[in-house]
Length: 137
Image (cartoon, rainbow, N blue to C red; front, side):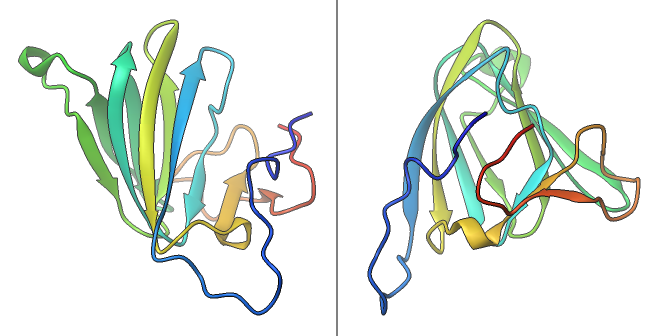
């Protein structure tokens, strides 16, 4: 079980939404291999480790595949932008990958949708496994 609310700061009402929020995340072989979308635009920045595979798509299919990394002779890119509401999936190509990212406007859990396991773009609208209090992949 993963409680994905843990890093979230709770604000007393009323509050203004942040213009942007950022994160640093360590991906390993066991984590976060799911399709998800967010209402904000996202910028991913590769920091270290193995290249990270970023797939994006919509209900019609996978639109693009990029490799975030530092080996520019192998067509890696250090930074990538994911449009708002675009399905995305990240996975490391090695033992681990370290990235940072920025959401604009700022991240809110109510804006996150996670598709059920086994769904991929091109299979119509997915059943969702989140939002919810505790996410169990």
